[in-house]
Structures are given as C-alpha cells and as structure tokens.
Image (cartoon, rainbow, N blue to C red):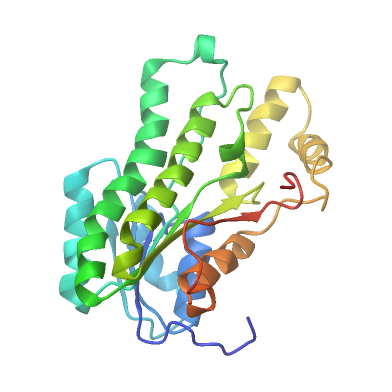
Length: 262
C-alpha cells in the first residue's frame, strides 16, 4: 500500500495477541492507517503498548485470555462500550507446541495448543459477530499457518489446531455472508519473531550447534531464503480487513516465502 494510505480512518479494530511479534506489527500498521484500536493479550507487555504506537492513536489496551469465554466477552463489551462499534477483528494470538511425536504427546499439551489456537478464535468470533451483524457488517481475519495444510512430524497438535482454525474461518464465512461479514485467514510460513528465534535456539541446543547455524539450516529450506518480518504478515491482514478485499471471504492467503506452492 502506498505511503499515506488511510484505509481504516475512523474504523474500530480489535487486535487479539497484540503485545509482540505479528500482533504488535499489525496494531502498528492499523494505527498508521487511522484506525481506532482495541488491543488485547495475555502478556503483561500489553499494558505498555500505547508507547509502541504513533502519537495520537486512540487506543484501549488490556489483558485478556482467549481460552476464557468470560474474558473474551468482557474484552468485546469494553471495546463496544468505548468506541460504539467494532469493524474488524484481527485474531493473531497463538502458541507453538512442545515438539513431540504423537506417541509422546501429553493430553495437557494437546489441550493447551488446541485451546489457544482453535477454541480461542472461536470465542472471539462468537463474541464479535452479534455486534457486526447489528451494525451491518464487518471483517474477521484469523492467522493460521502453512502447517494447516498437512501434518508435520513433532507438530501434530499445532498442525491440527491451525487446520481447525482455517476450516472454522470458512464456516464463519459461509454462515455470515448474508450479514455482510467476511472471514478470511492468513497462512504464514516462517516469521522472524522472538517465538521463531526461540524455536531455533531450542533446536540448536538439542543438536549441539549455534543458533546462527540453526538459522542458516532452516532458512536455506525456504525458497526466498529468509523468514519474513512480522510486517509482511501484518500487510496481508490489513489487506483482508480492507475494502480492497471486499469480495473475498473464506479464503486463506499464503505468505510463506515459497515453502508451500498450491
């Protein structure tokens, strides 16, 4: 988008998972295009998020736990009370799993990953849809993964959770099209966030090599030869939330550097 674009002037945008990484980049991008923001995360860093945004941004920020329906309902109610409406939901919050074969995966870890990555977006969608219906429409954008298209060893819970999220997004799109609510998702590949860097460090430690060597090994597998910055995923989220994508619903936009071609 060209410099100075203001596609979200006056729009109210809820970004869930906004404290760091892709969520923070998304909040900053929306703010730069004139949005009024409601930002939430379970991470205490959300309390100081206003300092990460352009001066003058109209922002409501606070902690919320997407695995707790009451917490999500309170977040959405506070957003609507503050701003009077809710135009866009960008659900970015998610977790990786502890790497393990399915035979070694604990039930608690399975539940943790599915609860955050699949049940959490369901809670937020369920909370925002009535408000979007009442005001005549809205945009829902979820963040899935290129791992949502097939199973990968040691990441069974993560793959299952992101596949569930992608299919959930399609179901919402089908259900709410008549209410002028679109639902789409972005499916990233490797994103150069602290979560990604930690995964590289952990794998490096298990192999007895340096984190930089591990990065070189993993990034060499990507046709474009690098993990993308969080801003690249934010750009895709803003596109799907904007009128540029008004005729798209139920779609998954791949931003993966070429690791999956379909």
